[in-house]
Picture 1: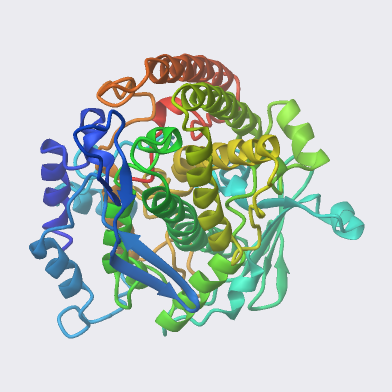
Picture 2 (picture 1 turned 30 degrees about the vertical axis):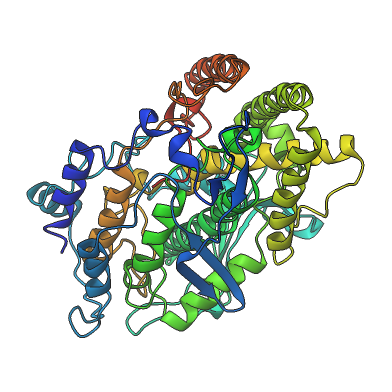
Length: 534
């Protein structure tokens, strides 16, 4: 499988299987509704169709129906069968093989099977010379995707002894692992200057300090725990399912094709149902690639994902998140925490765009006498999302009856949705940055090890290759959608204004990266896809 898989990825890109901006049109986004107007009706009249779920992901009491994709047909029978065969334990037994290999040997293997950068693996956003040093872990958590795990402790004794900043994944010690692996569960402490001061090993209940005999292993465990959690919880469960799948389902079932909010969300939901349908077959079941790449028993993998839903705060507005503390704000102000600095700038750019879009939509609705009907549709859309988020640690709250207050709620909701499916997805889906070197990070660890095993490395490289499928970029014009097919010209001018702001933000971030200790491109609009499409 590892030998043939890269060629399929390369071929998919040649044939543009991921779609292009030209594929996104009004005609391609009518799923869930049918036009029931007659010849005498000037304006189309839409009626909802009974939708059926192509797939369903169940995580305990949490159910995620995956509807038919608006733009893509269901995967071919051949592809679906291949995904099922891969997870058949009788055909491909779950055999954990522990082989140590040098990075040079790994690079040769990747080259021989075309699973290398420039072939099946995408070019990473950032270059890492190494990921073993204390400075490398400082970079990972303050100038890399690990930033999403950082919190600021209020415990004065801990602040004084170990520093104010904490990455706490110690709860993962409760997850069962397969024979041959060691348990997860770490807590890392960083001081005010972002230096790594201590790693607490939750299994051994021991603080490991720089210079200790187990320091190298503790750092390796921290990286592996990070790789496991960001991939399975933050990326797969919370971004793909809790946010993107919920949004696209609410859009399809609650908003008719000509609704201005559905028109806006069309580019931000492109290919989402299709890719989530693939995840239902190849990433969440027992013996799937996710299960095999981690150290977890399937029972614990399910437990982890269920808890990922319960603890989900993905709908919480970014400026109000866990980094809205004095310590992080001070770092961002001095250019030492680009995740927050660039994230706030990007979030505010989206919010201005959404506000402008909805203002134009209000004027058009008023002129066409659709204000009341479109507001009803929008309340249904918001209400469906609210019902879903009641299961999460953060809910969007029930809608306000006052039109102005409700409009403010919609602005916040759409802004956060767009932020997550573009920037946040870029961060949590950053596998390509870490999949090309066996000394970087992967989702499992062995007792005393300081690098991944070959099997884990190759599986992770194969999963990372999936992110090389080229899909529409955020900074595309989408000329076949906005302002086309009789829709108002303001759609196009509003989108172009958004692109101008994004271009300006890209230039500012690029300039800042020239003077930062390490470049941080995850919040750069130039590198983002327009949706959760890979």
